[in-house]
Amino acid sequence: MAGKSRPAVRLQVLRTQWLTPHMIRIVAGGPGLAGFQPNEFADAYVKVLFPRPGVAYPEPFDLEAVRAEMPREQWPVMRTYTVRYFDPGAGELALDFVHHGDQGLGGPWAAAARPGDELLLTGPGGAYAPGDEADWHLLVGDESALPAIAVALEMMPAGVPVRVFVEVADAAEEQPLATKGDAQIRWLHRCAGDDLVAAVRALDFPAGTVQAFVHGEAGFVRELRRYLLNERGVRKDLLSISGYWRRGRTDEEWRAEKAAERAAEDAAGPRLRSEA
Picture 1: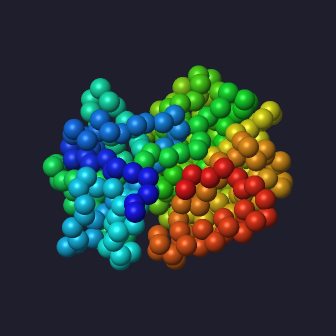
Picture 2: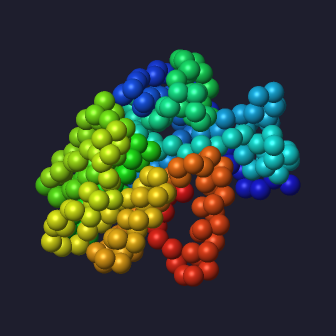
């Protein structure tokens, strides 16, 4: 028997936009958008489902039914993306995809996407939004976290101090970031050898309570987790931290490692708020 029904949202690509040489925005909509239920999180994420070639899936698509009734090798491949924006009035939902040539799954799909192509997704989930309790905010990430950082900046109350560190390949990957907050944004370039962890460590922390969002490659996330908790005393309930990917690992390998790490953390005690 299938578990609880989880109908997928079936959208059509409306248009694509190359934001930078390595970032593609897919804007989707169509009748299926009525089935999308937004949430209040800056890191609202969806699971994009990539059907296996040659496999026929039940209609309407139900992920729980697929998992219960079909062999694992026929399950759609899933990738996680932050909702960059949802505009019900315009009938649009936007996702930003990092593109590195033929590497990966989502990037090549987005590069080849054309109006009318199908976009199948579930969600959204999420865990983080800027809160009123904080005196100032710290946002740290790489390209994979940039959509959530951009949304968080747009949600910031007017005049609230925000310190932002974003690591990208080079200056061509920088994007305009809008906010009403009092934001100081620093772009770090891998091509120049900029060190994200060192930059955060060098920050002169403003006075007061900080709420922090640190997401991206697992290596720097791990280092900054220890720094913020152990050396800076950031409150666990005000720290949203997660490794979206790990250098040298496929998405499936990293998810398996992450699940094992979470099991160990859960055995040791309550873990930090994390997106996925």
